[in-house]
Length: 344
Image 1 (tube, rainbow, N blue to C red):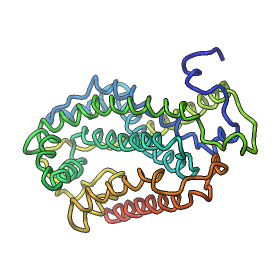
Image 2: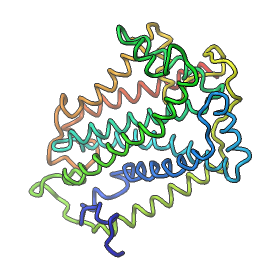
Image 3: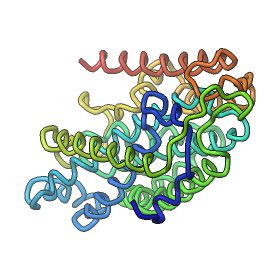
Image 4: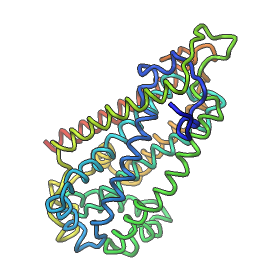
């Protein structure tokens, strides 16, 4: 393999033990690959999508049913977005369960957490852009949660939806955020995150004096493995996109969240479940922010992983962080399952 820019992005050598798939799970590289798929398929969808309330759902239907390979294009974009959210969550769990956030990587952990939040926002704004009857709960209830914020809620709501109520300006704003605002912000944070990975020394491993394994692999081998992973992930994504269509529903005729078949997207079902407990600001805004704050404080408020335990799963020195993350993930999964059960 000849030297090139892509090869230059990788360190000359990396530890062989920490380069194995069973340690990294390939989550970081897979996330970057899926983001590239989303960028390409999203750019192609822009040629057909019309961001107006009267035409948005119809343009999605036209792309799906009349444009050659349009349905496949939309399915690729949809499933890549869902997989990216799952893979980003897996990457976050792997970082905590291996103690890979230890200094000097604490700030880069926050950058990764910010990317995870941006992926959620990407998925949510893209979900709203369908502008069909299936997204009404998320559109109405999700935006009304902003209104529940004390003192500033009404002002934030008008900024979000583009006026005193949901309308044409709302779709334009979500479209602008999805296509331009979040894309520029996400690209900036992603490149910063990758730069910090290199600057902070790459994969988290013990200091040289404490290492028991000295074997390393060259970046040529690492790139070969990454390309192989892209082929496998891309093939699986293509297969799913061929046989499992993305959700689609009739166009919105009247904006309401009362229809029984409408609900939050799957990644916000846990919030929907908590909203049944009472105050929307407490359970729909404050509780998710507390979860996010708890994740952000892991590298700063909890015991640091011991240097000699880096580079392996479940180090004893950061057991408290593992328990906290497992509890949060378990709670989110439980609430999601309860929300799904209530809809069956």
